[in-house]
Each structure stands twice: as C-alpha cells, then as structure tokens.
Image 1 (cartoon, rainbow, N blue to C red):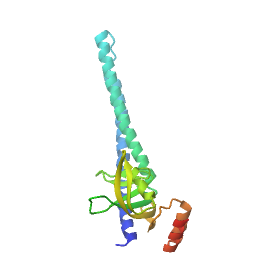
Image 2 (image 1 turned 135 degrees about the vertical axis):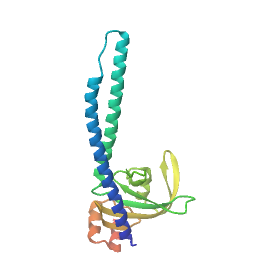
Image 3 (image 1 turned 45 degrees about the vertical axis):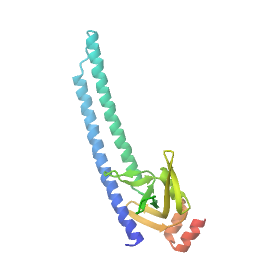
Image 4 (image 1 turned 60 degrees about the vertical axis):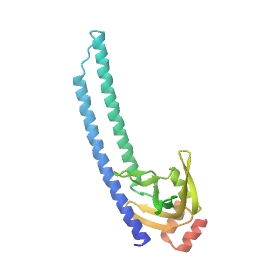
Length: 208
C-alpha cells in the first residue's frame, strides 16, 4: 500500500467514526433535553411546599435541594455532550493536518500520532486525533529527527522522532500528503504545494 493509499484509508476510517459519534451525540442531546423538560414538569408536581413547622420545613428544603442537584447533574451532562458535538463539528471539515511516528524506549513498534485543531477519542477510548496544543504535539513542530523528549505533568518523556508527515484533509478526502523534516504552518505555502507537490517544491517551501 502506498503512502497516499494508507493515509486515505486511515482518514476514511477516522471520518466515519467522527460522523457516527456526531449522530450518537445528537441523539443523546435530544433525549436528555426531552428528559429534562419532562423532569421539570414532574418536579413541579411532586414537590409539596410544607412550612407548617420546623420539621416540615427541613423536609421541604431537603427535597428542593435534592431536585436542584439532579437538575444540575443533568445540565452538566448535557453541556458535556454539547461541547463534544461542537468539537466534532469543528473537526469534520478537516480532521487533522499532521502526523508523527515515535519510538518509545523499550518498545519495539513505533506509534503514530495525528494532530488536529482539537482532540478526538473514539468509543474504545483510543485517541485518534490529538489536540495541536497537547504536550506531545510539540514534537510535530520540533524540526529535529532522532532522540527527543516532551513534558507531561512535569515529567520528561524520552522518544525518538522517526517520521513527520504533513497532510491537507477535506472531510474524508486527503488533498495532500508528504513526509517532511519541517512542519509547514502556512496556508498559502500549503496551497502552493497542492498545485505543485514535487519533492523539489516541498524542499523549497520548507526552507522558506
């Protein structure tokens, strides 16, 4: 399988998971929104305000507090889903733009990491896309191959950078893919490369 074929197949797989997760999130948001509306009606009917004496007042306040906590938990759960959906919507037009292959000490196989404008974890809790602001993304912008490191929670993680790959993606399609020693973070230069993606042009653009 060629470089282009591999990356096209990988993007197609990631894109399908993004779309599936988007539909699941939308469905859950609708269900939780409807449930919240139903719960509000039920709460209004179930809570009886009784302040006849001190004990009754305490019971009333406790019931109100319990319902408020339930409402807050439901609201937080809904907000989490809405933020997740917003991230997926941002990723779909261009799921990721870069990739690095790293060798970790005492591991035989190398690991691949893809970077986008925010992260995405599938239902199996596998990180398919890493946020470009995450600690490991520093290695994508590091211009050196070979032994390197990055910081996580105050700890230095040793790695060997084996490969850096630049991609231009549009929804489920790979528009441009090439291996490079230098991360190119300029849309104008990338647009030039899409028209003239020769090895010589890539080298010149990287130098610029």
